[in-house]
Image (cartoon, rainbow, N blue to C red; front, side, top):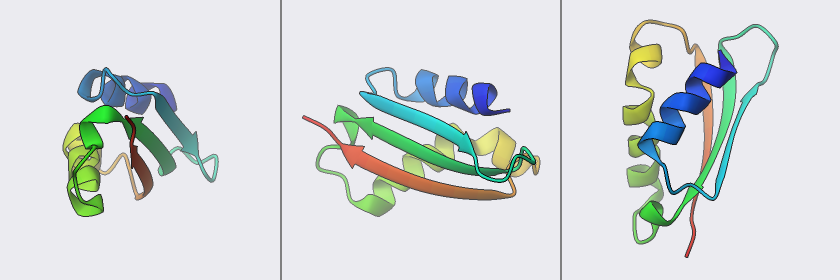
Length: 76
């Protein structure tokens, strides 16, 4: 599942300088995500996280993701 989520994020943030998806518990439904991209520059943390949620809308809606921890950064 981590590779599927990573692919969705890569499509949403093709200019990402850092992109990590980690399965926190090994159960395939609790994830830690890190995304650093220039497209986050000037956005609030809420707006950055909203974009990540939009990129992962399908797995969030169908219950594939039970818990999601997000860390985002705007990069120059």
